[in-house]
Image 1 (tube, rainbow, N blue to C red):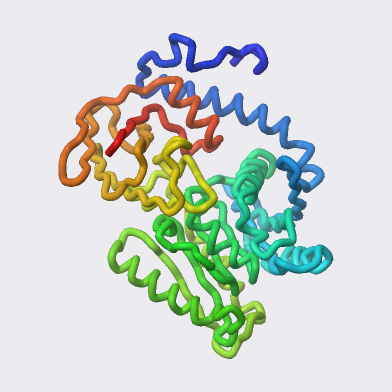
Image 2: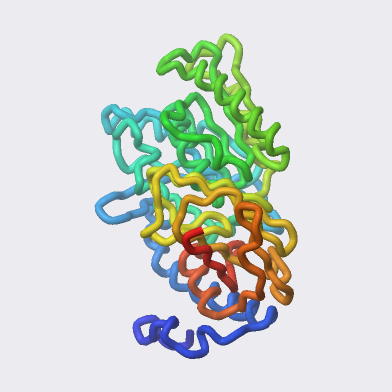
Length: 375
């Protein structure tokens, strides 16, 4: 790390990268690597954060934010709030963005309203949005002292469409999400297991059958929580007599979300691969070659035992760290009712480094990895 980035060798080819580490060594190298990454990212993102405009390839995303309250000891909250509009003129979407900037006021935190990079009907769930939001979250952590466990997603109308889509597929980034007056289209609620999810809809909001779809989602969420009491915490409010505009009655979603903190290492993961693909999700991962849209992975853990309940991927990765399990003792993996692995995965510098390069998240650092191949 003392070398300039351009002079560094590929870590995977260096002998010490795979040498076995103890718990203390793994913690120390994680702190050093994270500090190095944060320093580089801060330099790279400074201009975009200052100008309030993020860039990715040929796309750009403007944003504005307001800061509320005193900074807590454990860091600020971040509310990402998506505007409505969609398949209309740039001027109309600009006006929707300006409205969104002043629409909600949390007691504490960074309230940030981005302007969608496009003016399409699906402006908040195109493939580039996930990467933009990753940059936004990292920048808010670096420049405003945001706690990555206190990040919340919300949106109105077309922004609500975005919440329906992004919250399940990016739930490992969020503590909670609130959907206002949107439509889920084809998305599934299965990925919402480990975050709080609020749904607000006007009783008379009949366009695209939004009000009836919201009621069906309420039933689905109730059923999921009944079958899996450890997950799917939700709150659904159908606002009586209200059309598409709920007259700010939906603002109760903000303090409701603020109760939640992200569980970055949940005891159970339900991962549905969306049409926008992700290679990592909480403490699970798959290689690019194995990704399948609609693929389902369900894995739970209890102590040092992992149970794979469902897995579509030819190669499934289970990432480990000392907060999840006792890496000084044996780990077991069970699949289809049979124990398929018992052993002690080793902590290595390479595993720590790769997890930090991929996620840049202090709560998603992993010193070991197991691979399940061909089930």
